[in-house]
Length: 101
Image (tube, rainbow, N blue to C red):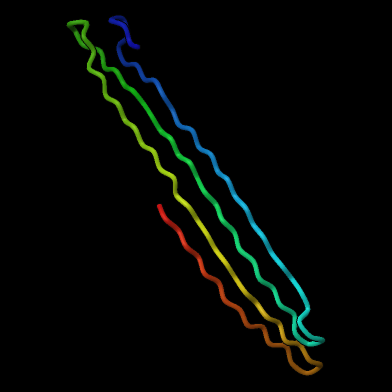
């Protein structure tokens, strides 16, 4: 990689990939009740690698290597119900989120 003429060299970089999927369903349950449910899943692939060389007077350059690899995930799900009459509208719902770094 680095030769004796390199004072301060650096090689490497990062690669970042994201894959995601999402699904939602909406449907009237009755004339006055409307239901929505859905979920999502996201997975990241992070790859970082860097090699640094620092110049020296003797021509021998020490190398420092940094490597980081992670595959964090995110997931979520929700449900919501809307009840509607002429005089009132009630919206009930909940959501759950999950993540791992």
